[in-house]
Length: 116
Image (cartoon, rainbow, N blue to C red; front, top):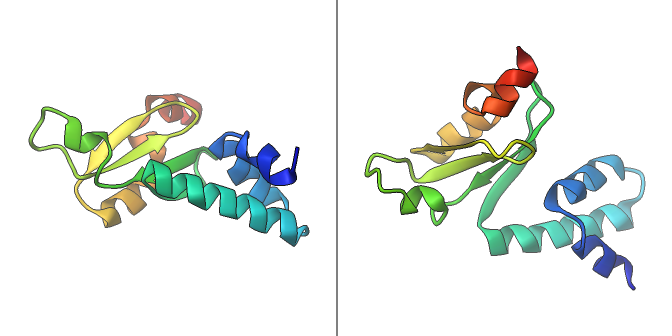
């Protein structure tokens, strides 16, 4: 099994952690980024970040995500997903998504419990 095949078997959050941890090993980091980027394009993930306040990974999902599928016509066009807790929220703009991703304790029940 090749290194790429092993990386493809990892969860997205594990790849994200590997990229952060492998700063000194550039070939591995670059290959992990490539695998994660391909997966993000496929899954319509615009960005992935780690919230400073909680340390959790938050994914910003694009316009084709489930906010468009909700019955509520007032739901936003972009969505945020707290990866470890499954918390989910819809927002209207990408800028709001970026701002809300930095503070998941404001919308994710699992993060709210972690900060309390």
